[in-house]
Image (cartoon, rainbow, N blue to C red; front, side, top):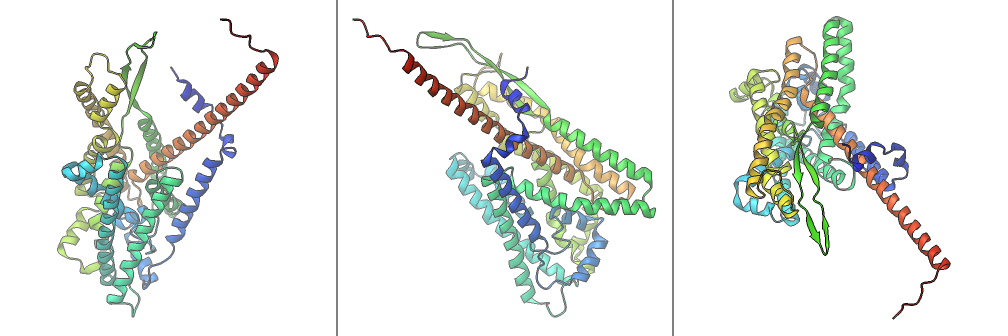
Length: 460
């Protein structure tokens, strides 16, 4: 049965957007910062040979170079100031969250509420600076080794300028993401990745159809890829909206001299509680060791050569590691961030709610953990299938540009989450309008009653 809130949300008109001033300002603020991000991807790092970089990215576009360029919105392909993208921040978040679950001091900070969360965020920022510094140094050295630096720019001066520019760009992106989350609409970090992927889609589609016109790809492959993309989008939408509802019962309670009947509700658990985070985390770990080796040309070390050969898109070790990381982060992020059985059980107990047939407290937490574990078997393998199967098909049919299920998953999930937040703001605005109108009517009715009839004196 559809609840009143769901019915109201379904009937919410998008025409109300013009009246919701706060929501409109949030959307405009978000769009403005995303435009700033896109402009920054076209500002080059000083000292880069544009022709050599262009030639290199054309040869690497089908492999890991195309992958990292896709996730940075093309900034890496142009060697812009945002070439590192937001990945150092995501990698630092992974490390801090892993440490939070293992280090008692950080775990205690997590339980301290807002102040503890601020300290953990500060540690994440410090980790972002450290990782961005290491990656920018490796990238600068690799650019020199790959002869992508302009003549006369080689040496310590180029390395220092490149490091300062790239670290500053990453920190600016992190600040943009935090501002969008706090003052805009949607999750800022996810939206930055989303915009970077979307910006590269038109060029990839044009290249795909150009390959079809030239005969490099058969029409059957083109139709098959389009069908696969549509089917993947539909499957992702279906799975992201799938829920496992746990019945919740509330007992009868007495307030004063009145007895109120107990109510029933349900606890919705998504098939994929972690959302797109496991795919992003797994992708960032795959990009971390390989990004630098991509630019080092023929002078790579044996270790980097092995990494590039075995951890490129479509390689068996790459796919195996990708699946393992997605499954791991699906479980880790769900039980440590998005759904904690102990906290949910405590909240139900405090609200006098219980699962029928399950004792409140520890037994309820164990039951919720059992249910979520079973759900995540399906959810984690759904994520792995969506992210890995397009990689396999792309390698089999030799599609001449990077196309991955991770990109589709990010685009669809972020779009759904952002639209849901917009609808929530519209719903809140609609409720505020209803409350204001009811208060005005109540005041008017009160004045009318006061003018028509006087209260009789109290008899003693």
